[in-house]
Length: 446
Image (cartoon, rainbow, N blue to C red; front, side, top):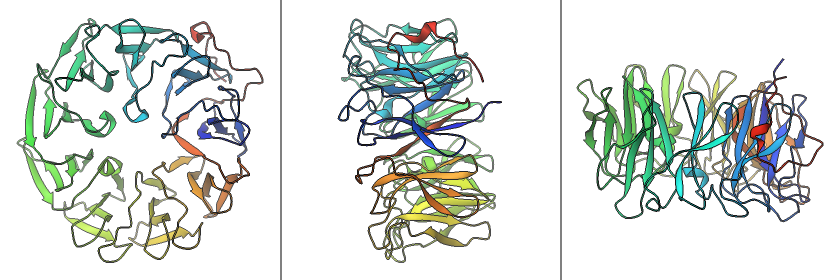
């Protein structure tokens, strides 16, 4: 029987930043020491990125022998380099984790990477685990790897930039041809495609520099609204498409135009974390009178303040990236001005309470943008209680909050949950990680 595995990034004082796992029995273990040595991180300082594909878990790492490349953990516990796309210590995945995206398309995994010959291009992992270049996107022209956005109408949409005329939307057709959708000049893209595109009503909505546009079912592209300010994400609620920026909350009306719903500004990528809970859409925003607080769109379309956690003009959501629905409640990070940023919850009856004061005082325990992840009847998150350093914690379904493991005993822990969960039982391999391309390794199921 397959079991799930929660992955997280950590360093224990003996190894650099490596990939760890929470086992089915609740214990934690290092999966493999990819980059040997205490001061040799395999994973970056940024929030880690991982994706499940064909029973294996794929992620970016560097070993010291190889640069930043694509690696995977197979269901039998083997950690292996997928392919050395940029030979030697050169980096094929040198883009920020924010711009490293994966999309499953026609039973293959697509991503952007750069080799040492043609430069940045579109690549894929085939169903058999081998890696291949998909298209040579004008050799020498594009300066950064493509950002893969979405599979829409059996075509793969992605962004590429040449560093001169802007970022242009392209698509990969079923016959393997690549088409520039936006045309000459392109358009700038300020946030990653995970936050800036969505399929709604058989149309692909996305945001460019100062507009919301859509790809229609026939493949044509049109602008539906010109908006100033950074659009911070999309969500669908009550069969209506919502988006937000620093000027307010908007929705797409029946005629395809954008209308202002409420003058509640949403900055950065916060609206991308908006969550449907108890028949309402909850999000973080500010109306000017209150700081960044918890708001909700009710079933009748009205917008109300759900809770003024930090009363007055102060913000409770200074550090915010995710909501999580767990055990019938909505969890989020917030600070009330008396306590620092801690774990809070919204109950179905509308009550808002702090779950635990992990770090008493005004410093707070959850002062970062790492995610809240529900796994195996518990809510996992990174916290610093002032004694152990940043480590992995969990809220159990009985309401108790506890440190999962003190991985780094010198208070320098850096545990960060990876927002990707393997659905296979991953056991720690007793062998050193192989560095031969793993296309020859079959992923067995347990």
